[in-house]
Length: 230
Image 1: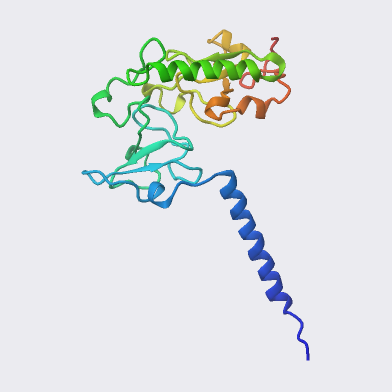
Image 2: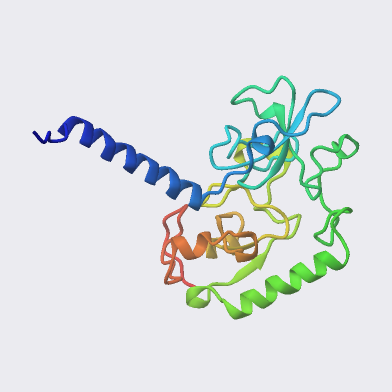
C-alpha cells in the first residue's frame, strides 16, 4: 500500500526551502565578512578587537563619538573589550582618513585644508580623484543634476561638535564625509535656507541620488517643501 505524504510535513519542508532561499538571497546581496573578522577579530593588548561593519552589525548607523560620522557597511572598526550593544562609545572607526582610533589625533579631527588628511595624500588620492572624475563624465546623473565634491569645511560634512544634528543623506541616512560627491538641494546654494544633500558617488558605492530621483527631476525642496527652479 502506497502512503501519501503528510501535507503538514510537505508544508513545513516548503517553508524551510523558502527560508533557505531568503537566506541565500540576503547573503548574495550583502556578503558577510568571515566570522573571525566580524565577531572575533584580532584582539589587542587592551582586550579590544577589530571588526568589519555589515548590515546586521548592532553599531550600523550609530554615530562615532569621536568623529561624528555614522558607521557604514564595510567600515573597519575597533570594539572595546566591554562593548555593549547600543553603546556608540565602545566602538571607533579604524579608517585612517577619520583618525578615530589614533589617540594622538583625538583633538585634531579635521582634515587638511586641501581636502585630504595627513595620512591620505599622495599618488593614491590623486588617482582616485581622477577615476571619480572620469566615472562622472562617463556616467553623469540623470537630468544633469550638478554634482559637487564636499570640502572638509562644507556645511554638510559631519563634525564631532554637531552631535545628532549633523546633516545626513536623505536616502541612506548616513553622514557626509569629506571628499564625497553629492547632489546638493538647490536651496543649498543659500545655506540659511537648506543644506540638504544626497550622495551621488558611484566610486564609494553610493548611488542614492539615482535611486531616489531616477529621472533627475527635483521640483520641491525635500526639507522646506518649497518649489525650486534649477
